[in-house]
Image 1 (cartoon, rainbow over the protein chains, first blue to last red):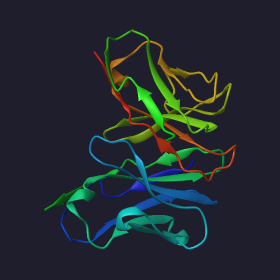
Image 2 (spheres, chains in turn green, orange; image 1 turned 180 degrees about the vertical axis):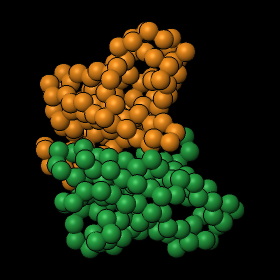
Image 3 (cartoon, rainbow over the protein chains, first blue to last red; image 1 turned 120 degrees about the vertical axis):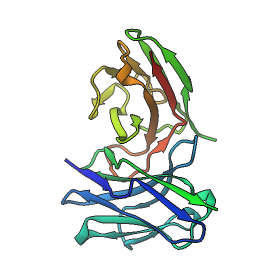
Image 4 (cartoon, each protein chain N blue to C red; image 1 turned 135 degrees about the vertical axis):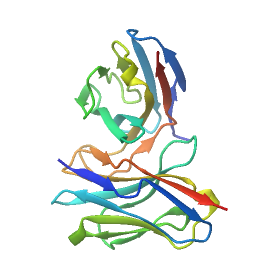
Length: 113
Length: 115
């Protein structure tokens, strides 16, 4: 069965600091990978996704993620965070067909002005 | 604009009562999902459906049921609510028919408190 690990459960950064959130998955075959964001009091929104092609994926609000197949990783990055990036970030993987998506437990990011 | 809605947004109920949470999407998506979100567990899949009359169990389906009588709706029923079912419930939908590349779109969530 597929699984997703997010290594950082709570991250605190100052504004303008660089961000990298780790995500590893366990599945040997073809995968689709997602990062979702949940702002305080809101529902989950898609940040970016990887299906195929260029392993460096750019999403909304300056976020990007790199798929490294050999490391089973899909880490999320942003060069300079803003206070408005304070949210919870979920990595998710879809493998084996038929739309089942497995989510990581999430990483709470707090950006201090 | 197409959207996905959930009702109620907040619900307080008592142990043992039957509760139904509604989910309605206007995208005409084939696939619909119910998740619960709990601290330390992230999102866990409860039930899902790939089309009308199709329902499947997720990883935490005990005590829950769903039915899919039309494309737009996937109500989630807690047969006999338990305190362990206090959670935030999210409904999601996606396009595709068996294809596994589609993005899921989430509703605003329902906060359920079981006393």
